[in-house]
Amino acid sequence: MQELDQLNEAVDSHDPSLGLSAVAALRDLVEELEELHVDNARDLGWSWQQIAESLGVTRQSVHKKHHVRRGLRRR
Amino acid sequence: MFDRCDEATLQVVSSSIAAARGLGHNYFGTEHLLYGLAKHRNLLPARVGSMLPAADVVESTIISIIGRPVRGDAEALRTVGIDLEEVRSAVRRTFGDEAIARLARRKSHQRWQPWRRSTGRCTSLLAQNLTMAPRLKQAFEIAHRHAERGAQRRIDPACLLLGIVEVQDALANHLLRDNGVDPDNIRNVLVRL
Image (tube, rainbow over the protein chains, first blue to last red):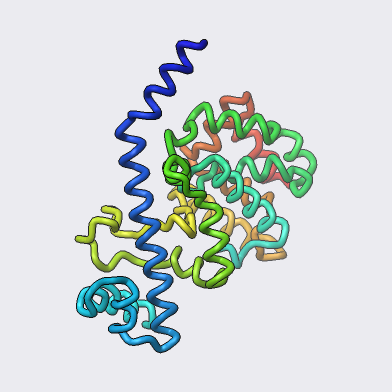
């Protein structure tokens, strides 16, 4: 039984599949939160420039990533 | 689809959905609905209700057939110290339920982006949206057809059960047979009501 626990621990701490799926889930979560916050900022009348500065990216990249999606949402 | 259901059926459906989530499944199938019906057997005609296996038996059979998913996103996030439930409630506090519902409805429009899933539709960690299993849809359609013939024209739990047992290879029917209940018997009793 103790051996089994040890095996479990060894698998858990160094298991790449767990670490990688955690990264994938984190990425999904970040994208969802970004969508929510960008939508919120735009609804409050923020410019793409202001949003880009807060996100630490260029205005072009934030616009490219979000304006089509927001257009679809409004339709 | 759910707007054609009566109060009792909606109650069954919502506890079935809760069961699907509780099992960590990302879809909603006839087996979950069978669990809901077994749990709320008092909403069914007594003769049929007594034929269904107990709710916890249904649940353990579902686990033995399908099993729990190996590891869900929530569990993966916990390993890096993030409580998805906490994040979800924070988002709900800030943006409201409507924002969460919108995440569930969103469509993939940029499939080439790596964070979009390859299926073409977006899953949402925050909304935890369930997809409807095709046989569940079929069951609802059959239930609706039966309800049309009745006086109340709304899907009641009995119609729903009839819908399930009439879908030939629905998992719920395998599950009933595994527990020694013949779906055809249930069907015969329901039709004669």
